[in-house]
Length: 179
Image 1 (cartoon, rainbow, N blue to C red):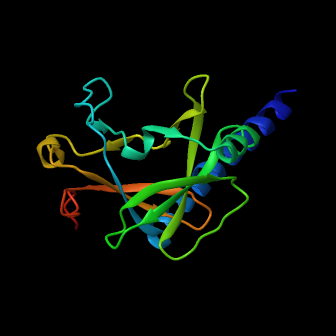
Image 2: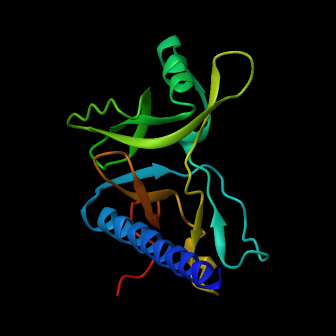
């Protein structure tokens, strides 16, 4: 029994390490190869000293979304996890234009798909769109640098997975010093 318990424990530890490293590798690949996207920030909360040095973020596309009947069907069938279709302007700033099922990618020039969670806001056709990555960590005592944040810089891969890379000011200048 003891030998079996040790084997199960060892196997669990190995699988956990593989899982964590695979997720880290996937995030790194998105950062290296993903397309650039800027999303406008909504007003942000101040620092949370309980959690350390970070900013809680909200994005303009997370405001109320008046879904069409087709969007409602998409959200219901996908249990709330959908692809947001974003039109990109010449500066690569995204604007939400519609929702698609995860398995129905339709990228064209000037658009990107971005995985989001949508949930019904009330009994009508109004939905809340949520971006899973809603905080930005930064080095201690550098919070003043991020006071001018106006955009979040994301890298997005072809299946809609994304990583928040940095924050940018109103001129799209990145706020984290580059090495």
